[in-house]
Length: 295
Image (cartoon, rainbow, N blue to C red; front, side):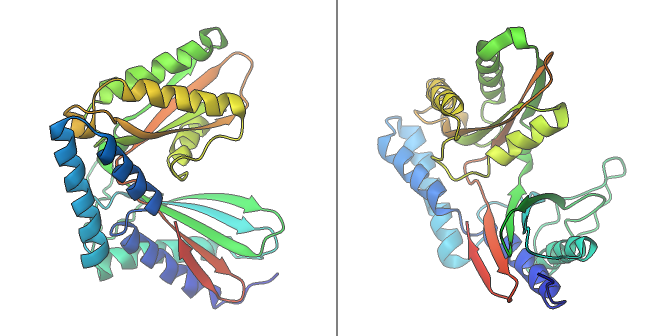
């Protein structure tokens, strides 16, 4: 299905709105997880921190305030319906323009700089930023855009290790737990711990990040992976790190694993943490111009 030229301004507007709204309205599944953690917490300092989190969530939703000052690295996960015929270059341009407009028109803090000179264009854009991941969905005429602003506190707590097959599942568990404990309060716990297993080194890190975008409580479709998610969540929450690293029953709200087949002589594992806010927002753009927003 050939899409009309009018779809590209729609994409631009949608990306602008996704960026701004994601920083103000925390996803409902995350809010519910925070409420559950607060209700079961026994340590007084952790209870106070959770109350501050919930107050920030309410202010963001009711007063249209940004929940955290870190506007993050803009990342888009784009699924293109197989029935659509889009101009890839125009799609890229629309996403970039929407990101720039969000930064200038809100305005948002521009967090993106060049790696050596630290030049800041005040647009939250630069070389290869925003980051755009593309996938294709069979038998669909919908463009699905999931946006996440990845803050630096959690992004700095990213780790990858090239394990060997002999390390087995216990090697994976040990690596994940060591990274979470070593990160301590830095990623603003309780976190969503994304884990990538398999693939190549670059794919493994991408899978770990993609895992953090899943709705909280969702399980990997592979029963063995799903069991490992639950086992690691339980182990992480026994560390006692707690919200903001000050102690408590909940160190992670969820553990999500994404995997890929890999080479016979290696087994890469990656950890990418997301802070307690787990900001994300989705737009589904139909060929007829309808736009649906959600999480």
